[in-house]
Length: 255
Image: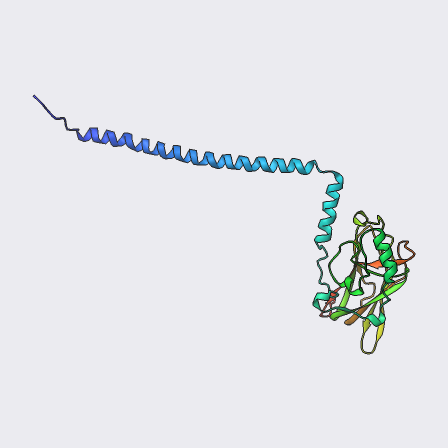
């Protein structure tokens, strides 16, 4: 005689108690597979990073030095406002600035090192472009440049910059300025105030000079008077001049 078996409540409960752990196990396995994929991706990224580090370690000293120099040129680590920037309104007082080095002689020199075939105007020193040859040249080792500042400034420092010997196509820094004097100019009336005498060392391509004399008044212009260079008998090159200070009077130190 045919009979049908109906599961008891205990049997149904036992089935549920088995299914629930199985579902949890499947979910756990799925998570493991997912994280395994992420681990594989991370391992691939780490292998790429290790390969890059090994490549960097294998670079020659010359390559490392070249990269360092380019970072120095591109990255400006003088974190002071420059009131001699052409882009903010500074300009050259041509009446009180030396003549640019003779065009034909400059062309002959720069063609010799296959770099430059024209003379740059004085206001090139007010721009941040520091590529080789992008400088203003004046004849001999004595000359001056007068910079009209963007506004009246209480002066504190002046920065000179020259290209490194390692990227100079002539292989020399003999055109770099050496001894120079700085004057603050107040107009009108025209009055020159001595602010300091300094020496530029070309092996330090960016040098900031704290002014020896800092009178408590603002100046609308600055004169840089150069009295020697580092050995070139024909001309001297200025790459960049920056002028630092504040538009408000500097605070006096507490007594």
